[in-house]
Amino acid sequence: MARRDPKPRPIVAELGRPETPEEEAARKAQNSKNYRDSKTIRNLWVAVGVTVGIVALIVLLVPRDDSSRLQAVDYRAVAVSAQRTLPVPLAVPELPDTWTSNVAEIRTASLDGVTSWFVGLITPSRQFLSITQGIDANPSWLVTELKQTSPTGTTTIDGIDWTVYDNRDSDRDVGNVKYALTTESGRSTFIVAGTATPEEAEALASTITDAIEQQTTGATP
Image 1 (cartoon, helix red, strand yellow):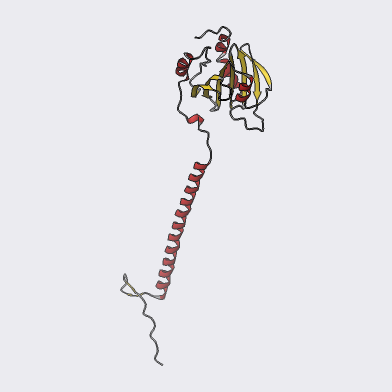
Image 2 (cartoon, helix red, strand yellow):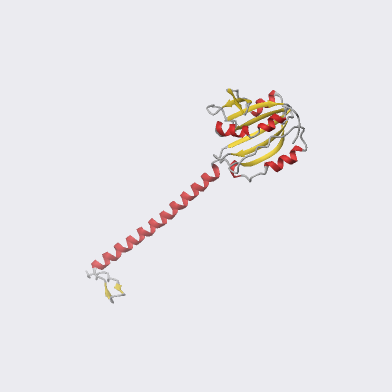
């Protein structure tokens, strides 16, 4: 039987001769390493792409409170216009620049038709507080505005008695009525409510003392 000649070894271009067994083994090892490295890089980019996709999905799906990112509103200017249409002095707080407003408007309740002046504010601690002034309001309107919560106490601010609704430890979803203060004067019912601390709520209430006292005379500014 004729003897087969061994398969000729590849010519190494750089050397101009067949590669030795050691050179062949080194070449194959390097090729294998290059393949593994390229595969690792591809896997890395795939993993990065998947991670970015998951993060983007979370950003889209997770609800966010955008109240503090709404466009600022000049509630004082809105109040000047609103005052022309309402029969009582409106509560217009004088606040430092650390407070901002994101809404100011006249509202009409759908159930009982009570008209109210509403100002939404972002506090220095980035919490939400509002002033609501209901005109000729009735008890059902007040209960609805306070999310059917019950009073927890009273406090006096600048000589004015306020009823306190402290719902910070409540298991119920009370929205923006975590802490609220209410008082009545003349034809107006006032509510200061939100997610801020009692200290910030009381500070806001103190800024409308003059407006509350004006209700008894009925005089408009």
